[in-house]
Each structure stands twice: as structure tokens, then as C-alpha cells.
Image (cartoon, rainbow over the protein chains, first blue to last red):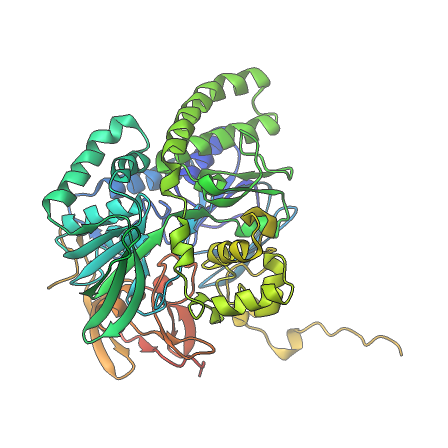
Length: 473
Length: 96
């Protein structure tokens, strides 16, 4: 497929919200391009298996069928796709720079939809950098997309809906879970099901999942957290602590999958210097948007979980609503049609919101996890920065995240602070005795993903270089 | 125990890759970081200051922890699909 240089609408992220927005825009004859770093549509929630995997006829996974439908719909609606393309820079105008195996490419668009979803919050503990410790989300991708159990013995830990989802899949795929370490109390489990399915209609499915976990007789340690991981022969040793009675216990395993909820991806919106707001219950910093997902910059729309976490089902409707906002802003539909088309979706989204608020405490990170971080524990994995170094910078006068970054180099490594920004902010807020939002957020810097310079330069001979005449002295 | 689930999908043909001094059998098109993780190669690189072992962590191209050398070039292994004869180096990742 040959791609154009300019589009009416470009969508970054081919998850549920991006796909539904792209389809709605395309149906009204807008020329749409959807970009994703994965090799197919689906996002993380419906992530496709690698291209070399051939689906068996007799058995299929629900997620996979949804993904296949996404691909078919994108094709049917003549939407251009740029998979395997990683966006490394977005500039006003809007210019989108990406790289792939073939090199670099730039596209222009009047309307940009950022549908980049979330990444996982993982609160550090002693030994969290040990190989064999992975994210719960990473575990989900291994199971659902790559169809692989991460190890023969697995411990799952943390909080939030992913804990149950991952447990369900490990059991379904015949894996062995040594223990589930749940930060929340037992009574929160029922709420957790709600958050996972996000609608009462799917509640039965949630119950089925829970029963499967209960009947598999996996030891569940509620109100507990991981305090230490050390290497041992043939695997790792995981120390857990009961938050209430402080009792410690050690369990041996091969793999520990741990996660503490999700946080919206703001790489692109921070780069574009639009307004952001802090909302702990929706996952942290989010670009400021109106109810139709318009940001503070003209032509820039943020949608899906990246606009505040409410799950995959809601993401679909958020995408639709965003598309209607573009169609209205572009004078393709009039106000009457806009109101007519959006009123039902808005009502539906409001219902999700009420529902989501009810369970939002599951996604928030309890104080105990932050208090548990030892001063010698690494917070910034890329640059090996410990909690002690962060505290030192604050004692010397650093007052916000950007100043701490300048002082310590935290957030300057390849991940650009995606892994550690939240925990550093929590530690700093405690130290400075202030609200997390008072610390600000890391200024967006390009490239937002590392990429080899030879890809940017491409192949050329010496003669092809434009020589600039030297300035007169 | 076979960690590869074969109920829903058929994988590509078997190929061999070289990881440091080991020859590992995998299926063509499988994800490199996943294969390394389940083939006893969890240690992928050394951290910059403390030189501690690091490995696959987020599986979605965000954390960059799963970097290895593929045929002498630094890559994020969760984004690489296996081909016959790939030469992987882990540990100290100075590009050759």
C-alpha cells in the first residue's frame, strides 16, 4: 500500500478507541491514516498474535475475534494503516515523525487523534529490577498475544483489574500460580470484577472468572504486598508482607508478575505543550479535554484510556464521540446532526463514568506501597537512580519533577520517565509534604522513543551532502 | 512443561538462533523477548551505573529494558520477530 503525505485525520494508536474513531471519520469521506507500533490493530487489550501464528479453525479466543473484526473494518472503510511504525516526534501543524524498519517518514494532518492508551504503574520494591520480575500487563501480552506462559511457576501481585484477568488466563492456559498477592482487602475483589467488565451485563462473566480462580485453589494473600525479591537457585525468592499484621513470608517462584494499575500515556500531549490536569482516579496526568475529547489546541483530540482510564468498552464509545467532534468542527455535519448522534453516546459514557468512579479506588496506589520503598531501592531503572538520590536532590532545593530530573538524571534514560515518573512523584510529594499535582510533570522531549540515528540519516554519498558556505568572518 | 500454548494457533516452522554461545530452537516469527525469557536467558543487559542484570519488563515498547544486540545492533527485543540464524548477544551491549 502506498501512503499519502497528507491526511484529513491521523490517528495514533490502533486500539479500540483509535479504530472506532478512524472508522467513523472515514465513513464521512475523510482521508484517514492510523499508525501503530505493533504489527496489527487491536491495541494492547486485543493485541494480535504475531503474524506468523496461524489461527486454528476449531478454537478461538474472544479477544482475537474482536481484533480480526477491527482489521476487516479498517480495510472495508479504506483506512490507510501504518503498522510497525513508532512515532518519535509530533510537532504543531500537525507533523508526525515515525520510524520503521524502512527508515523514517513524516506525515501531515489537520486533525490529530491521540489514542495511545496507557502504560502500567509499577511501584518499586527491593529487587524489582531482578530479571524474572515483569509487569502484569507484560504477562497479559505474553499470554493473550504470544500464547506463552511466562514460566512454570508464577506469582501474581499488585492491585487493579489486571490481577484477576492475568490469573484467569494463567489458569485457563494450564499454568501454575504459586500465589496471588493482592494489595487490596478481600472485600475489594467483588468491586474489582465490576471494574474489569465495566458493565453489569458482563457481571456473570466476571463471576465465572472469579470462580475459576477460587476453584483452582491458588493461595490468595489479601491486604499484602511484595517487599523484596532476591535471586535463588532456579528462580527468585519473593518476600511478602501483610499490611495489617506486618507478618513476613517467603515464596519461591520462577516469575513474579506485578502491577499497580494503569496510567494514561501523555508523551505526545506533553510534547505539544497542551494543558494537562491531574486526576488520580483516572490514572494521573491527562491532557485537558472537553466532553467531546477536544484538547486545548485546535485540531488535537485525545481519546480512549489515554484521556482518562475507563476501560476498553468505554474506549470504543469515546472514539466515536471524538470522531463526531471532528466531523462537526470540520463542518461535515451540522449542529443538529452532531447533537442527535452524540446524545446517546454521552449518556452511555456517563453511565460508565459513574460505574468507573465506584471502583476507581482499586486503581489508586495505597500509601503503604510508597512507604515500603527502601532508600537504596532504584526508582529510575534507566539511570540507576535510588530513592536516596531523589530525596537528596529535594533536600538540596529541587521543588518539582523537572528540577529533580535536572539534578539526578531521573527520567532522562531511554524510557523518558514513563516507568518511574509516578513513583518519583509520590516519593517527592511525601518528602515535600505537598500534593502530587504541585510537582508538575516532566516536560515532553523528543524523541519520545529512542531510535538509531542511522535510520534518520539513511544511505547517502559524500557528494549528496548539501555544503553550506561558511559565514564571512 | 511446554510453556507454548498450542490450542488456538499454529506456530511457524522451527528455526535456530544463536544467543551468546547457545543455540536455541524457536519458531519463526515468535517474539524474541518472549523466547529469550522462556529459554533461560532472562538476563538481557547490564544497568548503566551499577552494572546489574536487567531483563524484559513491560512487553509493550515503553520501558526499553529488553534491549539486546541483534547482529551487532542494539534493538528492543519485544519488538523483534525471530528469523533463522539471528545472532543475539546479551549482557554488555556495546555495539560492534
